[in-house]
Image (cartoon, rainbow, N blue to C red):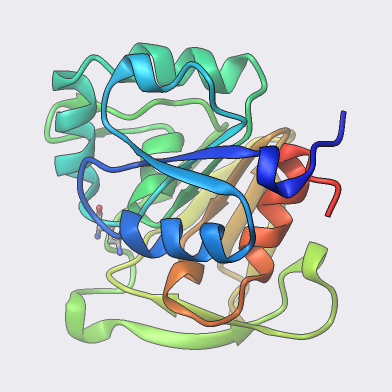
Length: 198
Ligand code: GLN
């Protein structure tokens, strides 16, 4: 079912990290975008974005705020969720500082895979559902996708073949930060997954 943009409500997990930037782009695209910190705020959402930041901190707060179980249920019930960078780590399989990630996407990621903060970089990459025009991908202490199951479609790779974006059903993951660019195409793509008619 397609909804008009202004009727779409996207939650942005606001425990830590770059949630404000996602909210601003989503609002620019005409949807209602709200910060989410409590389980009871998950109920009326058409989709959820899990931002970049520090996955160990985000996972710790997610468990402390009793969000992990409802977030897993949300993912399993088919509500679109997009994780950027630390958010991608939360969606994948793994245990970090003793805390379990949500393990809703069938893939293993490597944290801080390109080195430390000073090894951050930008690369123009083709993201398959966005067509031929490359997207400016900003990697900040980013993870990459080490292994992915058969149901996981890889959407983007670095020139050396390393996978940095994937989709599994209604779950989307990017190792980079589209919210730090002026290019709203990944956000628009996510809104299409949510079922926007615009
Ligand atoms: N290095 C961070 C982590 O492992 C992710 C960085 C980011 O989200 N930009 O959680």
